[in-house]
Image (cartoon, rainbow, N blue to C red; front, side, top):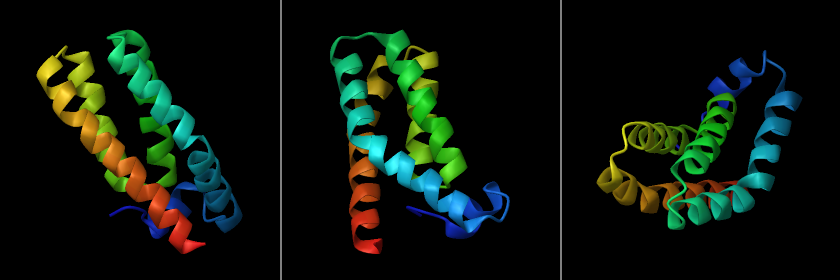
Length: 109
């Protein structure tokens, strides 16, 4: 599921305006975050990559963007475990999940 509105509302303390604002902030920062993640991956800066993915993962939990949350969790764990093959395999899925969320948001407006 790209976005779980019920869960997002729960996580925002049943305040629709807060849930909407958190999602909007995530959407606004996604392109920059995506670029930073790609850059850190290309530079093999594993600590910076972990930091960026962890930050994004945290945001996805609060916003209930479940597909992106799952990919971030997998990538974060692969970085922690220094599984370079898994990191490389997961990066395209991260890009796709980000693209899917951005496209969904554009249509949902």
